[in-house]
Length: 261
Image (cartoon, rainbow, N blue to C red):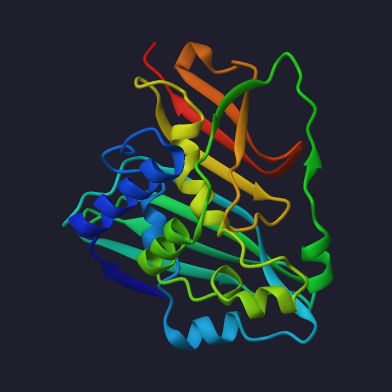
């Protein structure tokens, strides 16, 4: 499946404001690295209904979300979005959705990959993340502002996400949750800034893994670990960013930056 989509200045500006509001660190980058996610949920209705049809006793959860990019989107410049779908092998198997964003010259400027798995609702409600004790190699970075209903609603409207687990209290509590939960992709948009790699670092790769739901209204702390600088000679810098609620990691982002050498 392929369609042509043009990012508008208003969409890019709203994403920048969201990043700034979440992180409390002013406006985000001129074009946030996660801007390709603006288009990722824009599937045709038939495909959306087939992929996200109710599964008795189960709920779909996003396990992983990755973005690789050789450039940034430009407001007003159309890109072709080429979707691919990996159908699940069974009722409990994960399935993949992939999208390549291709410019008018035929160059892939960004690639998005996600893995989604149907699990029992009780399993989602019971997930609390991984215990994370402070260690010398972990550096405190920042705490997000409370991820309340305002930024979540703005994000859902911006990308066209209609999953009721993020907006419908009755639906969320019926699944055993305390209430609606923050979209994992919204955390992804903030990772670039929260990693604190510095103004000379250019993000080219981001891989998010999600371990536990985060209730709307929660402030999320972050810690970062610099990974071995095997690519230092080529200007590569790898960071691992942990998103924590209390003393447990609810999500982990691996980020690959390029820096001047």
